[in-house]
Image (tube, rainbow, N blue to C red):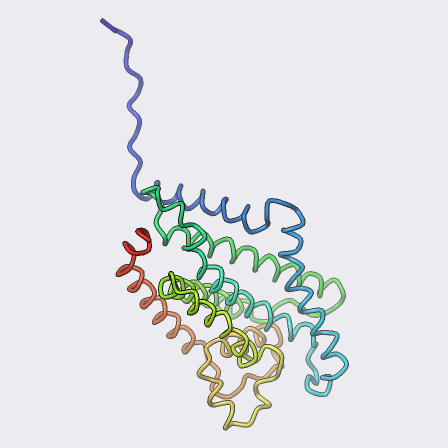
Length: 269
């Protein structure tokens, strides 16, 4: 008869602890996949948006000085480009998240929403790192990059992260096994880029055009982002934070409802 005393019973983990460990493991996996497991991938991830900004700074520095009186063009571009890229990267990376992690759903602890949230965390951290490094580089050169209204800047970026995550979840569900729809969503970002005020001053537009562009919630967020860094930059009439917040909440509710109704199909497929 075995008289060896039994060791202490292993504590049963709570659902929250399991969820936390799954999400942490997925974040590490996404981080490694995002940079390709090599330092070259990490450098390119940081350099790509900075290169885009540098090219536009050079172009607008020669042809667009008259459009930006009293405004530093590099700061104007960075405070529009990086927020737009944050939303775009979140939306597109999350849209492909279910397809890319299909094999993980064999583990019952891993749900499609876990893979999407892990992608959102990694993408947010990397884009905010790019934002910080770009502003640091501009500040080192001599530009004014410290936000005059830091709380406004934080609020705008928080809404951008939530909006991009919500739209990405929505796109991942409706675009699942629909390659043409995903291609359409990708193409949609080109006109969205030009209609969000990323590279032009919105308040200079005639009111008959501006009233249509104001339906774009990204335009509101980008304009407020610039105003947080450049107080003398005038906000266009009708720009506010309440509208994009409302659109974000509606998008999040719709995305989660669609996910809840299709979660079994997403796993089974």
